[in-house]
Image 1: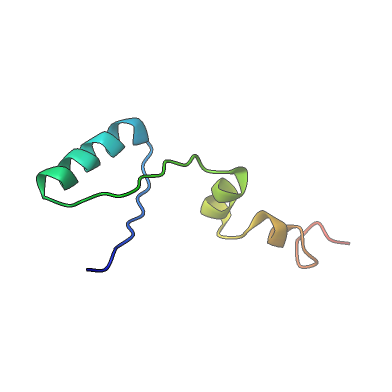
Image 2: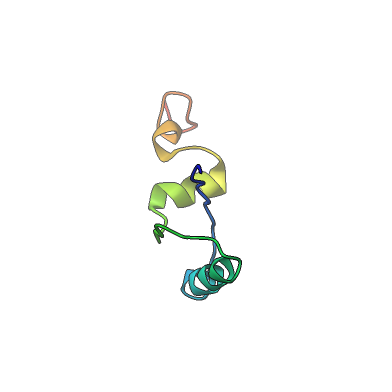
Amino acid sequence: MTGHICTLRSRSGDRTVPRALRALDDAGVDVLNVEVRRPTLDDVFLTLTGKHAAAADGPDSEDAA
């Protein structure tokens, strides 16, 4: 049997994670690992702009002389 990785994003992880784990358990799915991670500032910037923060500071940025 091969493993699968599932990535979820939620604004309310404190409620979503327990519900998801219960649903998976009820479905007979074995969960081997769970990781909860808060987004970094770069994650937020990427979500809002579609660019990594480092790329925005590059020579093509509007602030470049």
